[in-house]
Length: 198
Figure (cartoon, rainbow, N blue to C red):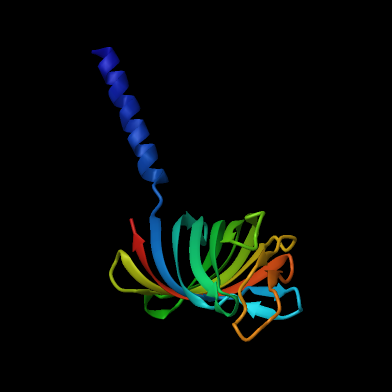
């Protein structure tokens, strides 16, 4: 009987600790439009990675006057002038500060650090350090669902030591070799998301 009372006491203490330390979780799927990234050919011509739709997902929790959490993004795009494709993924730890606005809305600004993975013919070393700066607004829909808009800069180290053959328009008689123009790539994205609070 004494052992049972001890276990009940421990369970009550633990449940109280869990309740006090409970923090809300925010899960946000995003639909974005992302642009940025430039290639250079062997003859000095420049080609842009075409802006395209992308998607991302953030999972965060409350921390002081803002939130901390993880951010994942994926973009598939083309360099149509040279008939090449690319796939870019980011995974970052991020932190943001929130500012209250009228009508239970918020503005926020934050930073993120992590890594990128680039799948493209002209890349040998696919991974690199990545960073981001972002800001946006959140608008209430219900107690547990909010609409959010965001602008974000993404920067990453890229492999510009590797090149790949490409296909120029049929009117060109010169061969084509491309690679990233520099060892750092900047991208910019604007998006809309739905914040689900748990």
